[in-house]
Amino acid sequence: MQIKVLGVSVLRSINTKGDIQMMETLMVALVFMVVLIVALGFYFKFSLQSVQEAGNNACMVSNTVLLSSIASMPEIQCSVNGKREQCIDTTKLLVFDASREYGDFFSSNCDQKVYFTQVYPEPEDLEEVCVQGTYPACALYPYYDPEIEYSSSLLISTPVSLYYPLTDEYRFGRLVVEVLQ
Image (cartoon, rainbow, N blue to C red; front, side, top):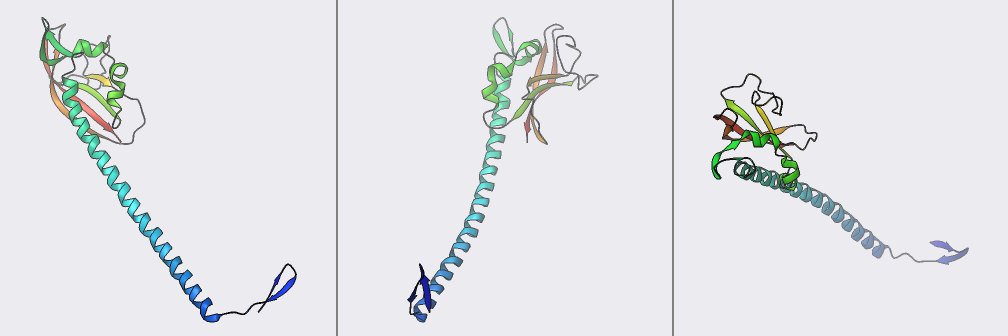
């Protein structure tokens, strides 16, 4: 076989047996690389899926712990003569801004929305958000709302006692952590 290099013809003898073995080696290496790339793709896909599941589990556990933490926060807990009670003061809920004080606390693992609702006696308007003008004839006390877009949510809740100091009465309520997904 003649090969021209820079216009000069060079004769080269072809060792067919060596060339065939070289081609076989290259083909085996190419097949091995393709199989390796496909195997790594599946491995990383399943690894990513297990990491996402672990993240979702951590989110659920942290939000379950968050339920008990919120109910015992002194900023919203009832107190009589300086002694803390096991109830939530609704007037404190109206003025306390959790996003300012506890913004990092709520957004550490996953996004969630936290609010209190009155359950019994059943209010006339369940969706009436409590603000200065509608209190105490309302049922929904927003505590933390990141105001982000979400497609679905999962609710975790626990019962609480809501105290209305203006009327000096207790009502049953629910503390709800809505995990945004």
